[in-house]
Amino acid sequence: MNTQQEIKEMVRQKYSEIALQDKETNASSCCGAGGCSTEVYNIMSEEYNNIQGYNPDADLGLGCGLPTQFAKIKKGDTVIDLGSGAGNDCFVARAETGETGKVIGIDFTEAMINKARNNAEKLGFNNVEFRQGDIEKMPVTANIADVIVSNCVLNLVPNKQAVFAEMYRVLKPGGHFSISDIVLKGALPEKIKSAAEMYAGCVASAIDKDEYLSYIGKVGFVNMQIQKDKPIIVPDDILKDYLNEEEITQYKANDTVIRSITVYAEKPVDCCTPNSKCC
Image (cartoon, rainbow, N blue to C red; front, side, top):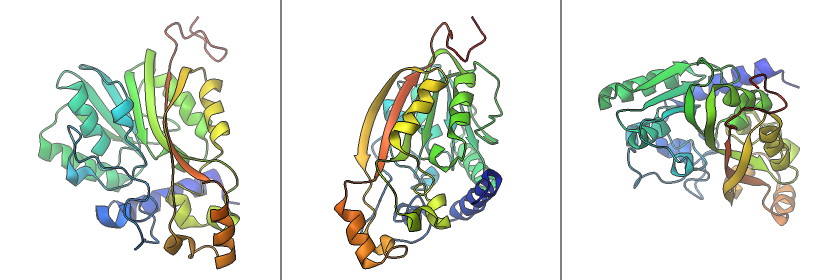
């Protein structure tokens, strides 16, 4: 069994490699984690082409949703993007918050931070910044953000409840988040769950949907909504790297286990929750 620190290091190393791959390679695999599929394109990611603020150089094809589309970002907002990668969702958020707002991207991987900063410099954005750090302990002060977004990142983190607690800390009272992530409905075959490539590819580290949503309420968020829920179909030419034919047939006979959800919730205005000390 890998320790949390070993898992984090595995993810860091894998995403350092992914930062140097092109979008086509990343999008045709499971969040860039290798095992490239020739059967389908965009297993998890969705198309940004018609979204304001989209920049192709910042799109590595690593997402599993469009959280900024649901995030209710207003002009002048301060937005934090967790696991900001090359900056794609940050630049889309910047189009919503405008020049009077601020966008902060946080990423665990130095190579991603460097890529994002280069992209921001080329675009001439002075209100988008990128900070290297662990989203279980964010490098930002409390009560700073109006909105938090994240795209296919929390599933990589061993201690998901710690991330939700940090999100609660850094959001202003009345602030909210909209995040897209991978969850499970049912059991994932152990051979997939234990594969390192699938771990860094957003799948093996995913947890049960109900457990995932329970963490949101436990830290004090309210008005939780599922904004989108879609199945993730992993094609045979990826599954065959982990399962034999009989196991593939058995896996596909069940309801879709792997799902992408976009979930929204708010921090109460008065902060008076069981875990709060601000009352």
